[in-house]
Length: 419
Ligand code: ASP
Ligand code: MG
Image (cartoon, rainbow, N blue to C red; front, side, top):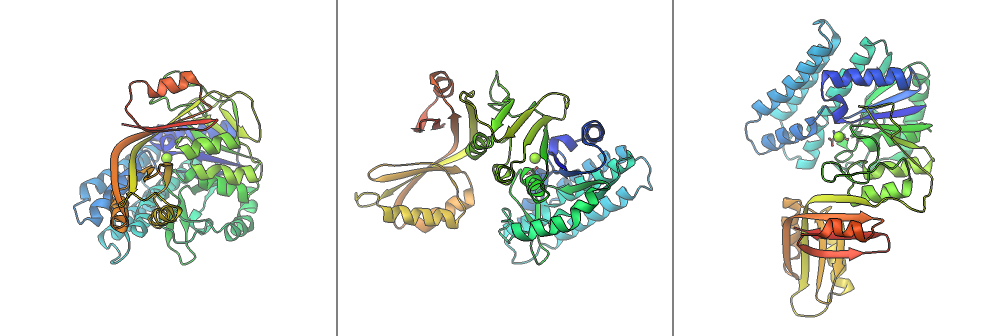
């Protein structure tokens, strides 16, 4: 039994859907395969924008229409038959979305509303994929992942109830997978009282890993627009190299430092059951790709990771006393309350600096909480560069010509925050 995950780029057009059917026919088979799909193209970003406009009581009709026509254009191309059920189902889903937008639940927080709206992207794409595979002779069941992956109500970052989720998946899915393919949504979970949650941006990889874990899959595949797991993002670096095989450990660390290739939570469930993860190209499915598994290598090419939109915050005490453990405790508590994650930190006698992703609103609340006790300075629009398994050449490559605000190195990892 295998799990395939197809990301946004692999369902961005009618052509892309045809390519998926081709990959399943040539590589996947007609059963014992569960397919997890992301929202089409940049739909999640578009829905975030629509939500923000609705939330701020701005007009969102044009953006909504744009999202609607994008989906209709693809589905009309894939299903010229006007009577196909897919048209009715899409129409129904868009009507539901419109309904939620027009009657935003009063008093609901932004994050909760986010999950109820942005989740539609995966409902649209999985509906289209289900019908399209069927039309290509690939019998499959569409299942609602919100009924299988149960989370708490940590909106936008639902924490999975593993016991419940595993029990439910094991109860229903193995029998179904014995006879046909199963298509479901990435990114989504559900609470025990029927609300939709999401698992964090790019969370579809994690969804696929949850299903793989609960089904004791023999392998999971992520189909991407790159040739496998590369040592750097080709958008930012030339001469990238592909890792043919790499350990779970290395991959987790790369994801942790911000390599966007795999969602950070994906590896743990797979490693716990020694399920290999293949990263393959949907453009070139015959190519080898990368196998992520329980292996070890002495020498490994340096990995370059860039995190953009970083914010460097420094806290100093007001009276020239030292930064104490007590002060640090206060700062950490505030960060954890606000779900501001530390990407890098450093302390000196009278100040403590952290680098985090920039969240305007959370930063503002952090300042409010702590300004009585600390002098706080911050810089935004920064980059955090990490080089894993660095050497002199790789450090020079990263630092030459840059203004460095903070630098740190361990035996294996080199990090700088720069402008
Ligand atoms: N569609 C969601 C996102 O773009 C989840 C995913 O693609 O993994 O973040
Ligand atoms: Mg994606």
